[in-house]
Length: 247
Ligand SMILES: [Zn+2]
Image: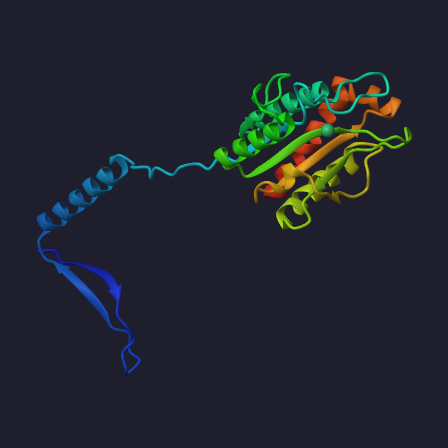
């Protein structure tokens, strides 16, 4: 009869510092074959067993994109007649597409030229702003980007700039990241973001920024802002800034 010896495991080092081993002695050849066959079957079972995936929900960032003004509130008027509410919407739609392509859930406060106010509201501007607040509250987004075009009596003023609520630390961080992208990608961007006291920045605690994409009161910048190439550059910068903020 053949004896097979296997070292199964090494025991703790004994006090006398001699290593102790445990041996299994299999004195039956058939028993050995049976063990080998069972081991192979166990391996095959493990490999072929259905893999159960844990159902992990993938988190999707959501963003409210707010095209400023609309309806009876046209916003500022450009040097050559650009209507702010209209160009804001164009930028908001491009931005929406960029964020969707990037896997974000997007919520638009408005998708057409109409304002959000009720036709029966006595104070339409106030009603419009309240509706925007409700949209933000109801969608609980990760952040809000409100799109505007700047305007100033001094026609030489120009440059994209991001505004934040100084009492909201995340709002400032978000604004800084977007401004940084503007400085990198646009030749005439303002160097820093700036705090401001606007309703859309203060109405919720959600990190929110107002992006003034440029001055339509500056003739050269107004022309640039109306080109698809520049619009894409601005929106791409906003996307990059948001992604940097979230990372
Ligand atoms: Zn505006």
